[in-house]
Length: 354
Image (cartoon, rainbow, N blue to C red; front, side, top):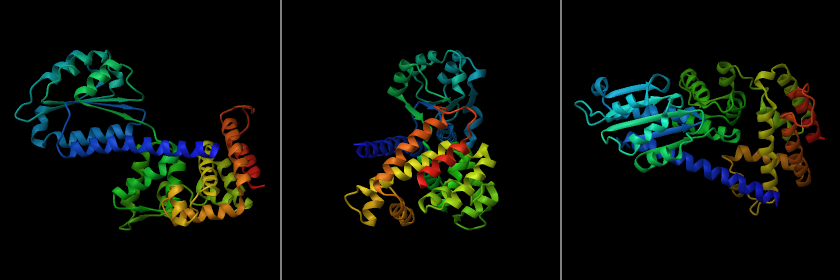
């Protein structure tokens, strides 16, 4: 029953992620084709997608010669709603449309008053509201915008979604990236997408014509160790290499700010959950397992096959229970406040491997 629930949750997560990405892609596609809605509400906890959509609208809504008279970019803390509505109601000058962008709209006092504009928009205005750090709570305003424009909710990615994001971003820029390099970036940076893309852009520049981002390149230019990271810790656990695992944990202990236990537990939970799915898969062929486990290549499958030789199905069930227990402990449940992440991780890894 737990196995089925894990698989259902995994599939639901992939479905939701695909739905959000589809809407994001649809908005970008329309904008780059010159098809605009009169009003956009871009809101949520992840600023990256809000910034990308806004930049795309700014780049495509007007020609350079039209910007001086028809592009207005304002900040919520500096503008009054009445002035904003008056600006949006204006007609464009010698252009097909005008563009109004309100950044940091969460700082706009009286934002609910924008409903009067949303109910009677100016069709020659493209009005973009960037509301970061949460969701707009006014349902009437959201409903009014949805009727004539576009509402996009920008959500933070889960840790297990970061590898796909990194791989896709590299691919969009005609680069391949080693799985180890992907793991290093996602572990070290976390789900700060603006920082991840910034570091990737730096790697694209310093790659010197090479079209693959290697773990060595990440180590040299981002300052992340290619030998001491969650990717290598997972490999040590898969191979039951206690010496290597303890060396990595010691390194984590000496660099606590950059090595929280939380992403480590998430990665290990994903490993052993997938391992459990592999044990119960109907099709245990290589292609069947790659499909069921949502793996990207044979390289990843090799790790799972090795893990299956070292951890039987009963041990996997025990480990998943342990990971849930230590996830709670990492958040302060049932442990002294003085205990460190490294101490918890050392104890957890010992129990997994013995």
